[in-house]
Length: 405
Ligand code: FA5
Ligand code: MG
Image 1 (spheres, rainbow, N blue to C red):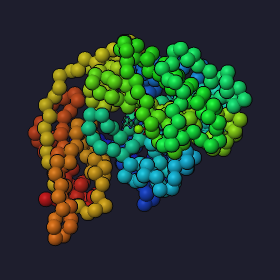
Image 2: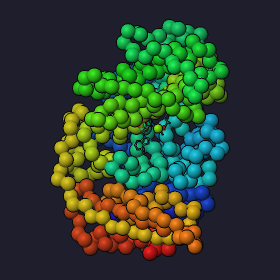
Image 3: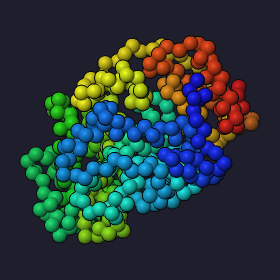
Image 4: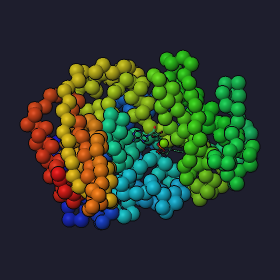
């Protein structure tokens, strides 16, 4: 089964990730399943859809430096503090983030490298692509590892009028919207912030229109957002097949980050986009697990290096199993998702909470989850699913300390 084939990288208070040993402690919550993904680096696998998309965007932003080989193990400082996350920011929670140990995490976003890159190179612009890790739910559009591309562009403050100039004829945006909930920073004049904001959104609209050039009249909208490391901040959504789809987050970089990295004479913008999100619609890939497939019927479809529509091979039958248990108030659904990932691997297509209630006397909560099993590339037997489900039950009980019903 999937579980039996997993190696156990945890030995004697250490965990090995990409050939390096890291001490473990009470904060450690990375699992062998997750660690095994660090070697895949789909964005570097020639003619993988993620790689094709990455190269497309890189060729759009021709003059930007390209980075794509940063180590996924970063410090809490890099991932959060350097980006001005407050000490109590929910993104830091162990339910959402993979901790290698108290001071070290698997990066949750490519922004983790902003400060370091800005310290060591003074390029005007760069693109940085990497695998990122988040504890999350299980369904066809969520996977605990996905790929982001970060883009940064900075300008000489003294030359901002020329450097950040855009051809307003081609821009749908009429300057930054001033809003109390999405403010210009005190360190910036309104003019500076508006120029950078306009350049940012103009650049991103240009990139997305280039990517989706087949879609005439692509509708794009900007939603006010919040990130600790940008202000004003935005999310870009595109209207695709009847739905608004969030492609990226972005904004004017917090000046403190530029100042602290030796760039106090500069002002800039940053964006971070999810490559799977875009690849799923561009290549017609219906399930995020497919990106991880090593099946030739998947990989070979993209050997031209072009954006082509995925031809699904037959869909294999699904089979669901329910599990119910009593749990305490500290129980988090992501902890259960992790157990399913570890035991069932990519055979788990979807995990859904279908029922919960509190016992009126004991106040304990009962939860019932439905696990939908389906292989991407073969049919499996009832016995096989029963075995996996048994194992899910056992590991859930042992690791989460719940009482199975
Ligand atoms: C961030 O990660 C910010 N670092 C982005 C950013 C960079 C903002 C620079 C400002 C400046 P967010 O968590 O929203 O933000 O993720 C960014 C993008 O990653 C999303 O728009 C989405 O396209 C993608 N993404 C987020 N979560 C998932 C997921 N679970 N699966 C697939 N893609 C995801
Ligand atoms: Mg978001």
